[in-house]
Amino acid sequence: MADNLVVGLAFDGATGAKTGANLEDLVALAEFASATPLLDQSTLEDYDNAGTRAARVKDAGITAAKLAAILAFSAHNNGVGQHIAKGNLYQPLDLSTELFDVGGCFAASAAPGTAGIFTPTTAGIYLLTGGVVLADVGSEEAGQAAIAKNGAVVNWGSSVVMGKVGDFYSQVTVLIEANGTTDYFELCGWAGGSGTQGVAGSSKYTYFMGHFVGAS
Image (cartoon, rainbow, N blue to C red):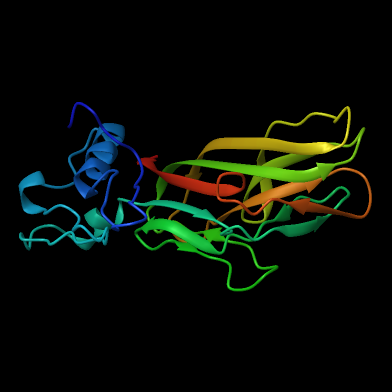
C-alpha cells in the first residue's frame, strides 16, 4: 500500500485534472481495512485526466464483485439553500450534486424536497460523515445534524443552545454496518423552536460523504 494514502477524490476546477486519490488508492484503503487483497495492482490503470472511473480491467480473473467493494461518495446541494420545519422531527436533506460516486450507490436529490440517499451494494462496515449549517438560528434555540439508517436516526451530531442569533454548524460521523441490499442512509437536520429553519446550501457547509471500510 502507498506510504501516503490520499482518501477521497479531488479535481482541478479549471482543467478537470484529478488531484486526489485514484482507484489504486481506494483499493489499498479497502485492503488495509479488510486485511484481504481485493485486486492485483498490476491489473489496473490509473484514472484518466478527466477524473472518470477509467479502471481498465486487463485480467478477466478480476470479478465485478471485487470491484463493487470499492465504494465511496461525496455530495452537497450545490449552493442551493433549503428549509426544514422546526420541531421534534429530523428531516432528510436535499443533496443534489455528487462530487464523486465511486460504485454508483449514491442517488442525488431529483428535485427540491427529495433527500439524497446512499444505498451501498456491498455488505460491510461504512464510515459516514455529514455536516449541516443552519442559518440565522434564533437566540435560545438549537440545531443538530444526524445520520439516519432506513429512515431512523442512528447518530446525532454536535448541538448547542444559541446565546444569540447566528449560524450554527453541526457535524456527525458514524461507523455502521450495511447489509448490501436494502439498507440506506440519509443526512438529516433538526432545529428547535417553531416555524421553519433555513439550511445553508454551500458545499463547504452542508455535505454528506462516506466510504467502505471492510467486511463485517
